[in-house]
Amino acid sequence: MLTLGLPGFGWDTSKVSGFTEPGHEVSARLFLPLARQGAHRYVPWRVASEQVGLSFGALTTWDELVRAADGDPAWEIPRGTVDDATARALTGALARPSTDGAAVSAWFALWEGYAGEIDTSLHDATTPIPATGQNFLCDGSYRLLTAPLGWALTRTDQQRLHFPVAVWPADRSFVLASAIYQDSFYLSCSRETFTVVRAAGLELLEIDPDMPLPSRGD
Image (cartoon, rainbow, N blue to C red; front, side):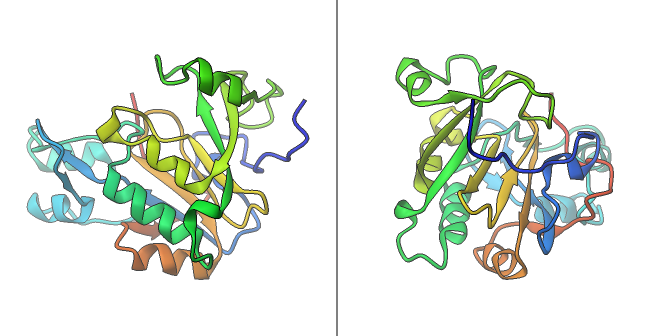
């Protein structure tokens, strides 16, 4: 059994609260950049929205973007994949105030259903999360790894790997989480961390945890 307390996500995964932890100053949606079709080139949601005349906000959905593009968008929806540049900016921002992001220890939740992504060595280095039904991580299909925060840089779109579904440090000063195959992650954090992540050039907007989940996946 795990002795580490998992993040206190809400039980209702149809809401933002299912992927955010109460008690933090801010809940925010991190929009994963949209890939241009057929190439590893990425576009922020705000830019894509402007191109098709759509008002952009924390509750903007992929379906709205597709409709505004007359059903033929020039981008591909992210499916739990994070590009290298976003992963570097994100881990760097979350590592502060430490000057060495590689030294920050974190917990990573990995989904076993991403085919072939948990090889033998990684399987041996991880621990299964018990199926307690406590929150979305507790259905018996997730494994837990502890590693430097910089380990997340090994799980990017360019490497054809999905980003961990949840990341948090031992003190849970922040929690980053998403359902599988989603186009966004959700960050529970302090006001200071929110400001630092936004200053890193990431598309991060505050969101009400009680709102229906605006991101989507397969």
